[in-house]
Image (tube, rainbow, N blue to C red; front, side, top):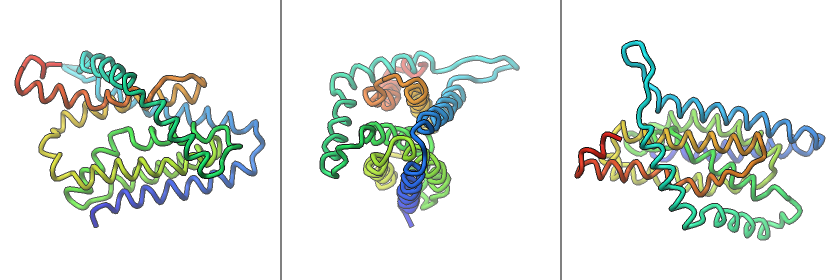
Length: 247
């Protein structure tokens, strides 16, 4: 059944969030910060691992880097586009509107839970590759594996950030479901190398999410989201101007 992977993913996030909220009600407040930092630490190193695997190669027994200029340009161009659109503020406003609609005015971390969980669940290699595999071959195995990881993360997120994590189900459904439904149309445009480049940029953004969680800083990850799609632009330009493909 095409789309089963996303359905399972949505189900595990919902279940994980529910379990996390039950735990939250039984935990003293001082535990919340430590749990959040632990999640940030895990997210931090997941991002590092994905970024390093995309940027570092081994040639003749020596380490070398690749796509570093593409990474720099993607983040710079993505930041300019994201700031112009102000994606982060739009996400915050959406979260605030839902917060009022669902009567969660007393939940000070509702918006943070929604934005942070949405970014983490939607950014990364497994979301893209798994959705393509599900849409093209009806094989949900990658998304099912991702669903297990997301369900565990949802428990920890909800235990520290509250019920705003429930709302992350909406962008997850739209993002993964959209890629799954459109897989047959977009797959011819996505080479394995291009998917790897997009995943590498996504891993850097996951690293930034972990940084925010660990150090309570505010890297505007939402405004950096367009960076994930810049490699596609360079891929198309590389067909016209071969020098661009060398990035």
